[in-house]
Image (cartoon, rainbow, N blue to C red; front, side, top):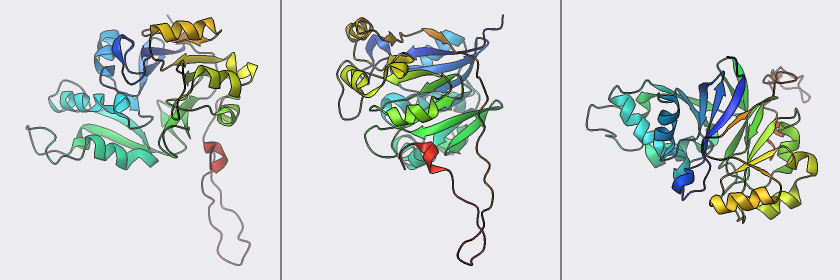
Length: 277
């Protein structure tokens, strides 16, 4: 049966996790896992319980441990032959932080003299990346510090903010094709996360109608968000994603004429696509 695109949450909680699990989601196509978004401490067992296999591709939004600590478990399974090497997509601004947090030991395992990243197909990404012949946009969000966290979009299907404060100008740019928007939201916000009052204040009605909220404190908090009129993701819940009205592709860089007598050069990336520069 052709089910098309879907996003399944294997965890929807904040950093304390608990029974909600650390927030992580899996993009599916026709019921098969395509891409795991974030890999906290409990993401791997939840993924394996759901699909009967280990992830083949992961996108990392940022380097807080509730989003990356499962990579150490996965490294061990790959090293011991229990899982295949994984494609790991990592935004370039967080590569050094990721390495220092989980991969800087000279002997990550007692078995063999191998670097941590030898077990992965490590793919740095800037404005986006190709995966299984589809282009995914990557954009900066507002979490903790500038350049620290990033969101993900598959044009016409979904936008996933990762951990963030409100980003209305970014959503207007990246969610312009009726994408369903999966958005960080706790009952009470703080300097690094969105709260219910933030959503109600910062987003206009047409954006609020497309929001699905996750990364909340507790089941009781989720019920309060529902009572306020919002859709809320639950652990294990799958959301079917609409078909794209048009497929987005990365911009093609071309040379531009020099204006000061110097040689022509290719322009840098279109910074307006990233939302904050």
